[in-house]
Figure (tube, rainbow, N blue to C red):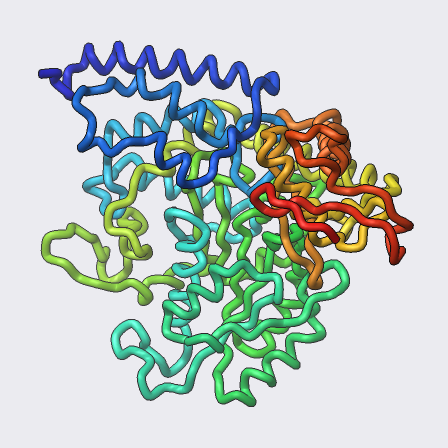
Length: 509
């Protein structure tokens, strides 16, 4: 029987795994292979028999080729889909170290290194955001958990309510104000915190999908008329759908005027504070009571690494206060100690997530990450100009971040929404690119996030050509004929074109 703790066995297996991963990274760096080898869910499931049915043991290094081949290739420069980074090597290796050491971080005695690293990282991020030296916070597993954590702290700040100890039964229903474009995790957090389906009151956006601060008062009054007490307002930095940055300064003004907690969901775009050319996008973030920032997006960490920062000390102390005799939390003379991060988080056992970012900052320096933000934001602006210059593409809005939404609008198409879906399906199934979709003002758009450090102008030009080719692949019978054929102009009422359905079927329109 193989000893799973044998150091030499680990060494040999590690070399075999790292060699395969290095070869994989070398291939994706040059754009080798597809971005994704698409297989329907049931077909994918059939490739992985139950371990209970296997009559022989398989070393992980032997399993890895199949894992790599069937996975989504985030490091491929033509991955321009969801907001998931291609992690840098130092971070991936640090995560391996974290997995081996397996020090829980909620309690200092269990995580002395990672708690200290968290403290230093929070100071660095807080300084970049414009917070003072008293910044507090924690790292947690993802932006959804981060928003829930920050809004739990905000709920506990409501005057006259101790929701943590007394609950909300019999109290006036609470509500928060958010942009219509806010991430769904804010609504999910509100429901978890007991506010119900009406706990999030949407605020209208402007023509660039940014929260319109002149509509805050209207939304606030609407909440009050429904019997709710508004206690917080959330600003996007930036929104998930379009990358729009809400105007944080006037939102902060409104929050200050009405005594509201000001939370900034900066999971994707708060890193603009690191890049001098884009710092203006988050002007006013220094006035927020809390900010969430995902390092696994623009700071190139593996998922999940999320920072939750509080401008004022003690802001979250009452939101997660509990005593357990078997946990060595140090209240430090009545105040919560910084070195026990479990006092301010949902998690009781937390992996050493700070190690990845701390190690990468030491190896590459803060300017490396600032340059990545600047480059991807710049590239998105360039891509938007290319789309605007093309007669057969339509830009949804001028991008502020590295997210670009657009539509393919060739002549002769009566149902442009169906065309976007069909083109995306064609691209994904071919593996040529990975793009996603979103719906803006009731119209389907293609959506790209330029997040891979190796994606360049040539890749984005190739994406435009691939979209055109996907809509008109020619008479190849294996591809079912063109998606677009014949017809009058874009708004014409004659001619026909085919739209391939989501799973390859065709409908005649």
